[in-house]
Amino acid sequence: MNTIYERLMEHMQDHPIINTHSHSLPTVDGSDMTLDTMLHSTYMGWKAINAEGYGDDKDAFVKDMRFNSYFTYFQKSLQELYGLNEPISKKTWQLYSDKIHEAYQDKLHRTNILREKCRYEKVIVDSYWNPGEIQGFGGMMTAAYRINMYLFGYSKTAVDHKGKNPFQVYGWPDAPTIDDYVALMRRQIGLKLDEGCVAIKAGCAYDRGLDFMPTTKYEAAKAYMNPDATPEEIKAFQDYIFDQICKYAAERDVPVQCHTGLARLNKSNAMWLKPIIDQNPDTRFVIFHGSYPWMDDVLALVHNYPNVYPDLCWMPILSPSATERFLEELLELGNASKICWGCDTWMAEDSFGALLAARHVFAKLLSRKVEEGFMNEEEAKALISDILYNNAKKIYKF
Image 1 (tube, rainbow, N blue to C red):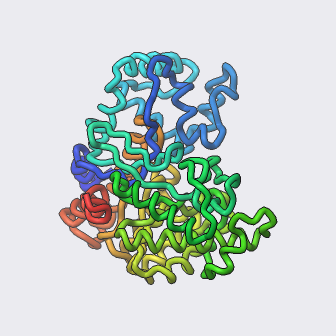
Image 2: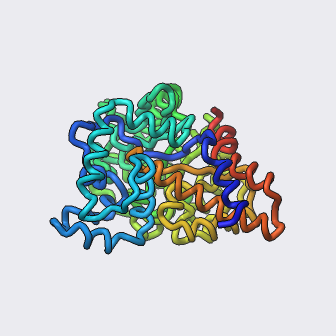
Image 3: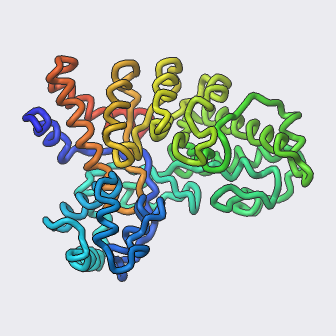
């Protein structure tokens, strides 16, 4: 890499960061932490590619995963954090496990990685297991409040993909009408925002398509507490409820973070959000993950809608090359003051790995843009500072 790349990497080395999206686990029992148990809480576990499935043939696991970005940056993270030079292999597997196990006997080890190595000043956590939970970590953690469950309040027994329903979670009394339901929902969301949540998180693409269409309260009410509701009536209820949530977000001046891209895949690309964005011009929509692999959707929405904000969370460890292409086009047609980044990981180690991937993408792309005369080096450094810190500070009002 060239010297501009190296100077941009140096600029990022100790740069404070506002991490806009994480699933940081509230408690981690370090007493039995090993390489195997840690892999379960990374995206390799999410993809159901676990080393245990390879039995004793760890080299086969590494061979299969060697060029996968999740594995690449997880390994880079472990090597830097634990002072290991050799790559992960059957030969070094136990060495990695021993280093990890020893480090986790210090209860502050995880916090130290996030604060000292990652340099996170704030982390916005989507705690889907307990929506809106603010973990603390000395004030480092705050939260986005996940609202998927409210789309399933048409019945007291229907649940979202995490098994949640607001009547069950909050012990709500009967709500005879859909107006009563919306009032309870607004009150509960408001309580969470008052407790310190800085955003509303819509992970709806894991439950249904993002095709939230204009509908009336009359149409939505047909599904409410109706055991014979049709799929079309249930969808109308969900469309109406999500619109109500977006309107309340505008009232409270908090962003709505929207998962797009890889999820159920059917109707999970960002362009399906266009009707709900049209209905809510005063709501700030933060589009996560670049809608990968449908990245052009986000580019079009950012170009046409001033209330759409792109977030690069997850993208660099999902595909560094795709992130580089996306960011370059985003800079050319978008608004650089809107771009943010988050790790979107569970463990401190893969959070650091996600940061290493992001640093590489930013330095690689922007050093080339400096060489091409698109920007100068100081502008590149300022842009990096905006993406890692300044933009999020303004968007989430820290």
